[in-house]
Image 1 (cartoon, rainbow, N blue to C red):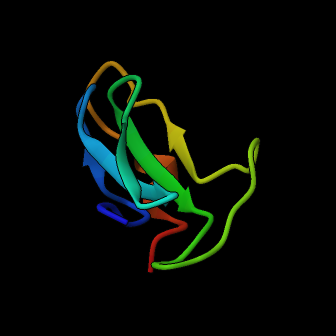
Image 2 (cartoon, rainbow, N blue to C red):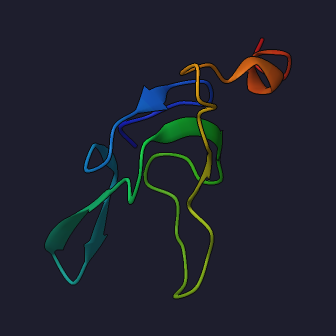
Length: 72
């Protein structure tokens, strides 16, 4: 896992690296945003279709003020 809740990420930034049958693949952010939640921990098992990371859009000012209230 390359990110944590509250992190601001650019499009293409690595979010998680998954491994299947000894092949590693890094999943990148599809857009700029703020990580709202990471739904798995390091070495956690997951299945096809599982939600791994939730992104929240960044507002026009570049802020994610509502999310900051959720981040400790």
